[in-house]
Amino acid sequence: MSAGAWRNIWTVVLSLALAMFLTILPMPAAVEDFRPQWVPLTIIFWCLTRPEQVGVFWAFGTGLTLDVLAGSLLGQQALGLSVIAYAAVILHARIRLFPLWQQSLFVWVLLLVERLLTLWVLGATGQPLPTLTYWLPTFVGLLLWPWLFVVLTAIEQRLNGR
View 1: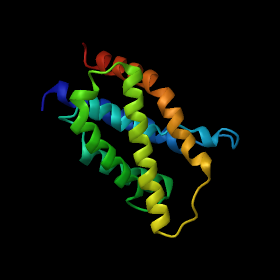
View 2: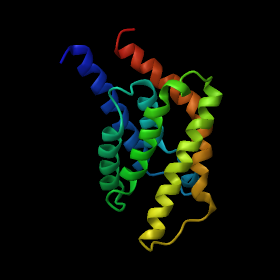
View 3: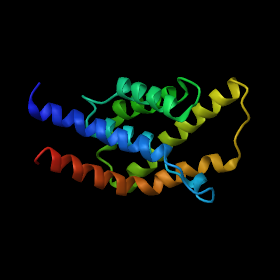
View 4: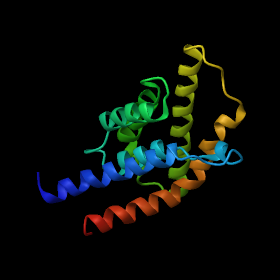
């Protein structure tokens, strides 16, 4: 592998590690319900910008790691992340044509799908169902997407020397 390919892989790994850290970072109870879905947002970004390198297997591995870190049912996050990664990879050529505000709507739908799959797993395993505040992070992700896209694109370009 060339040095550029290794740099690309390390950029993805470090951004996903930072997203996982932000996911498990303790927050005050008053704002805990507004915590963005950092890992799904980061997976969606990499699937849209580098679909030939980051896809379902990256999402599944990241989901399993997140399951272990968060102490959730093993495979719960992996399922949701794999499904949204698949949709993002399949539709990446179409989505990248849209302006950021329209991409945000697509990302919001993917975040809703991830939350629905998690809700399904919770119901199937007999765990208590969450309140309506469960859906708030999807709206935060909708608002955060343009900023996250710009920041991650700038980091990627700077590290790759473009």
